[in-house]
Image (cartoon, rainbow, N blue to C red; front, top):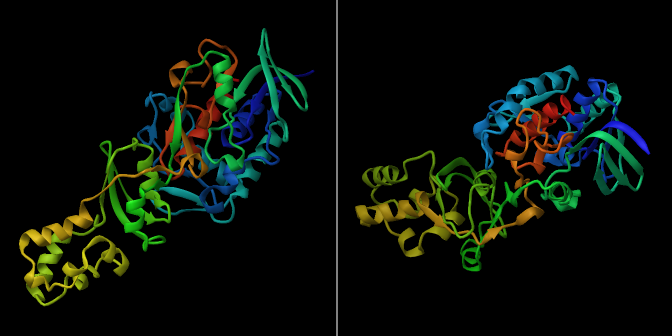
Length: 391
């Protein structure tokens, strides 16, 4: 039997941060993970450069059944705290877009930084270690293929269900159920949409095309790029809105977020009345998009033959595009998992289960999901930090 102070299950962003903070307090910490390397999602994130936080991270950028829950942790460990750690390790980084910070080199820089901090804090990490059984009497007993561990504190940082090829499992949810902790239903978040067959056929020539848009649903709106794919729709705007979309809902998309399209068409009609509709639209869109959105007979009309009503109808095809997704691509390509461990059953200051002393849930396994752009990493750092200070 290996007796330690803290067992952390999951060697991802939240688990490693928790281990560092607990180790700094002189706690004897062991991190267990079934994978063959640490921080797999860190390594693949941001196209291999890790979008490790966001300059604008705040509670407003998170979804949860208890949206206030994240406030304490995010205030206890801010984006500036993590940036200071990155600077301490002399990792070069840059702001890419809307406050998103990326490594100049590789995501491995962040993993190496966390491992260096773990080593300094005396943290032991055991990989290729599967947990078979957890019991609790006076302490937690964790049975694994690498022997038994007993600890005063047990931290579940095992992540959600997104990207199963990276080793995602429902392990954390099963532990929560074992200890009578409520779970909110889980679903894929920050995920591309699939389209119905008729829509796929209509937009069959558009895969690979990317353009700016404003997309709306459930009272939420995001202005980012949209990408047509062979299966449906993706790109930052779509990933963002997917976390708010409910099945059978229609998306409202404006493909002219930065231009007054109807006004532009009227000006062109006034100045160059013989201009064909398709030529006028090509000032804003690629030919293949125009061919998919507007009928050929209309495209070959001169603007002078288009009345006010017809111009408005043409404009609305691009500025008020209504599309009902068939569904999402699911956990296979989702960046995060919505739902999970009920925040109301945890302390917002420590992420410890209120009625189960010594048991903590942090990171993606908790019902707290950030927007695209480094927000989920910031939740991992913050929740790991506060748990590490208490575990």
